[in-house]
Amino acid sequence: MKIKRGIPVSTGVAIGQAVVLDTVGYRVSIHHVEASQVEVEVRRLQAALAAAALEARETQQTISAKLGQQIGDILGAHAQLLEGPVLARETESLIRGQLLAAESAFNRIISRFASALAGLGPNNPFASRSTDLMDIEKRVLAQLQGQRREQLRQLPGPLIVLAHDLTPSETAGLDPTHVHAFVTEAGGKTSHTAIMAGALEIPAVVGLGPFLDEVTEGTRVIVDGHDGVLILDPDDETLERYELVQNVFQVLERRWSELRTLPAETRDGERVQLMGNIEFPSEAAHCVERGAEGVGLYRTEFLYVGKKIDPSEDDHLEAYQMVLRALTPGQPVVIRTLDLGADKFTLPSWNIEPERNPFLGVRSIRLCLRNLDLFKTQLRAILRASAFGDVRVMFPMISTLMELRQCKLILNEVREDLQEEGIDCNSRLPIGTMIEVPSAAVIADQLAREVDFFSIGTNDLVQYTLAADRTNEHVAGLYNPADPAVLRLIQNVIAAARQHDIQVNICGAMSGDPIFTLLLLGMGLRQLSLTPVNIPEIKTIIRAVTLADAVRVAEEAMRLDNARDVMNFLRDQTRRLVPAVVD
Image (spheres, rainbow, N blue to C red):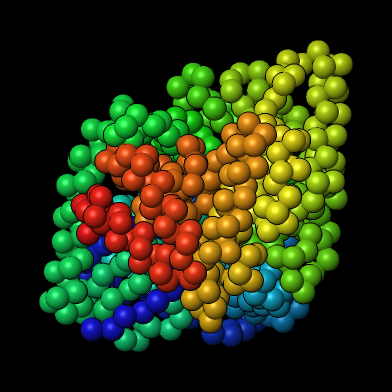
């Protein structure tokens, strides 16, 4: 048995036989042609580009219908590049200038572009976009050479796909009824492939590094998408343990489906509001299916995926209205303004200078405040959407009081513009701020006077508090939401919200982890926003305990002096009170 660790990008557990996809793709040797054949090669190239673009457009339509327009737009971007003048012009130049065959010339151009992206450095979000270029290359070479990698949608199941990397179109083509999980050597949390995995709701782990040479076709493997683990040739004990996990979750999922219409209420009558975190409008339906009481975090960054230009005000508005239409009338939708930069998407048109440490640089609200046209476009759309339902706006990565006041001032300017234009909007749009950097948590009492609600983003709060990148395996042991320093900051934020009588929510990964439910409830939180698939499990815990149980657990946990002891205590207490969930 061998255990490999990587980056979890979609949760769940899957057991099955491995299908190992080729790691080389198309081998293209340098091949020259006679001068008399140049025009033939140019015509071959043009025909291949046109056919590949048509194929990408057809795939875009299929994927849009299956996973939503935002996902399909990734393939639309591929088609735009294939249809545009750059690839054709550059490749034709090589064919004519160096008498190269179409395959050889196209391969050189794609390699040149991919090298340029890779040269941006590992911290630049565009570096991971080389996968999209590989997708385009395979489409064109398939037309030129008449070869195709086996279509993943045609693979019989159940299977676990292991690959060096998967292109976005390959991932989008996975059929979850046959392919139960995938694992790749390359990739990261912000890659298009990771986005696709989350939308498909199949377990996925990426970024394991080289391992394919240790696997043969048909090897039994286990994929643990919760902890980012791949197990090759599991021994009988490990296999039995994970089979038990699967069986328990199947039973629990049947029970959880019965909870959909029941409130998240403790045994002694304390009500908790469970909301959904979503990336795409199509995920609003998942919130409804799992009994969410609204959307507590609508991440809007992926309006930019696959786009050559910024989305328009109407693009934003349509995305927000789609969510409002999917939810029960009256349910709230909290729209987070753009959290771009650092590990998120940016656009070349923004002319952002490379930064040594982008996580501490021009990202999120800082980026928006430097690009007011971009910021105002989104704020106009949010205000317009507020005329159609309970829409709320939330500003991310606020680190100072002046940043928050500047955001509110711009929001007021936009609102006044809309009113002068006679466009309906909620004149009292609820305003919130994310608490995800230590400075914001420390001055929470000041921020509370300025807003209607807080939302604690634990993912970044843990990272910035402990100075530990959770994607860096060398410091992964330090990244722990149970660290007393993090818990004290959360406690301070809750106390400030209570003092100023405003709502406080928690929307990071901590909110969907059952180990922390008792702690958060006992600390005073009455609103959690989490990935929709986790809602039934968290509701099960809430309905199984009393508020007194939760308060006792929180008080004892806060007296412990290290993260390991806190985690062990919370796990033991949750197992004692709700054994089925932990076991």
